[in-house]
Length: 301
Image (cartoon, rainbow, N blue to C red; front, side):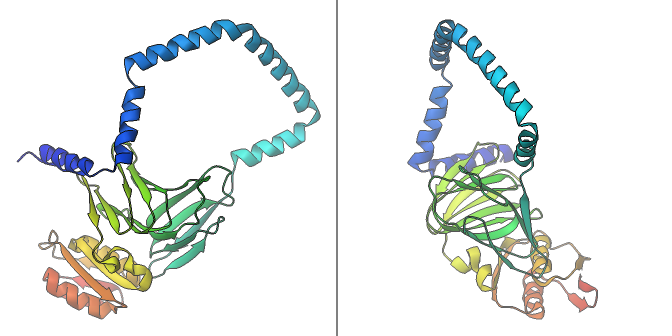
């Protein structure tokens, strides 16, 4: 009956479903924090400090002198390089309301942005990482490169690619974040590093922003998970406000809800290449409201 206990229970159930990979990772992190590990590490540090103290002092003096000489003779080149490192060039691509956009990243990865979504990435990926920022929803078909991890940071999750194609849904105005895998593997963690798991083909992780719970489930209907790339408009357990926000993004239309008595009802629906009229007729029946479409947008009563 207690909401906090219910949330903890759901998270425990989620942890039971973690892969062996995650369990071993947790064991390693805990082992590293054990007191005997810290004492041993401190002992080694004291030993090496006493042996190499004079060597380190000499090395620091030589390094300082070398840097000073280099700076005197290469001041302009040094400053130019510093500016380049401190200010990497980022590229931002935005899909507006009512639009979809396909973007090719520097490594050849293909990203399909859904309506009202944005991705930010560097002009050139560094030698060891490929990091991008996402707001909204996108489908990724990532070029495999095990020497360069590909990571997506979005809202309150981090997604690390271990395979190839997957979907991330992380709109700011929706209470859920989801990651759905079509092929390969991805690792998903929350920003606090208190939850994480590995998703494989036809698996999906749903994280609730309202209570912090999460669950992993099998993908039964791929069109519901990432069918938008084939022009399927899907509602998956959305309330009226979330459903209309999705309609607004998809058709680039404004709306106002006058009567909010039915706002907490959740529906699931799917439309193939729909018209605005068709969607509103079905939603009005499911959510039980009357509506009007005019030149200013949609009025829901």
